[in-house]
Length: 249
Ligand code: 1GP
Image 1 (cartoon, protein in one colour):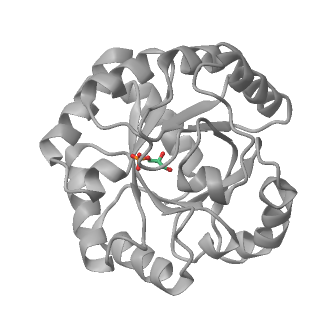
Image 2 (spheres, helix red, strand yellow):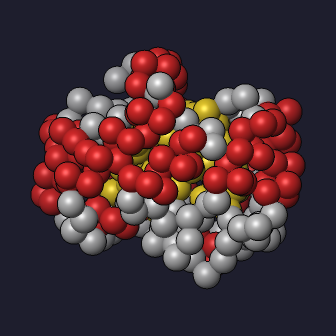
């Protein structure tokens, strides 16, 4: 797909809010990944993210991307946890800087190392401020996050405003895969107040109610991974899509 950013913005406008589904190539075999992608596309997902902070096997990831690509029309967006998350065959990449990391590697060094591959593989870079909320998750550990407590919306909004000033067009508020708590709507609302770009929220979202509250607070897209990975129902995914679309319309 050409111009994923325009596609996302147009769909967001048309549908109200979008669901992205995260497929961790390390946990899903490529066969089941493509089956899963087909089912979530049918349930109304607008994009598939492939990656995660513990998905480090490039061969498996590349194979997974290619097999998903054959099964769905919605864009495949890489969601790399490191330079090893950059593989050919996807449509775009969340070209992210982990703004609240204590390790400069995750803020700008991995990006410099990975940029030539993004160019070589013709991946559309979506400039993303990645902000980690809460602690105890894999991404929190791997990314050396100076984490933002769930009850400090102001801190998140400061980072989001800096992202806005630095010209980033996407912000991703991340509670972490399988997080016990999701990012609170109050924090989403605080970020929405200052950030004009495309706002993604993920981590620990498992039901239509939570998804709806997060979208009502201002998210443009929510991300769901663990719920589906653990065999969650596709009917619930359909309900989540319906809920988030109706909230914003
Ligand atoms: C993780 O935000 C995504 O990077 C999705 O989180 O796996 O908890 O749905 P879950």
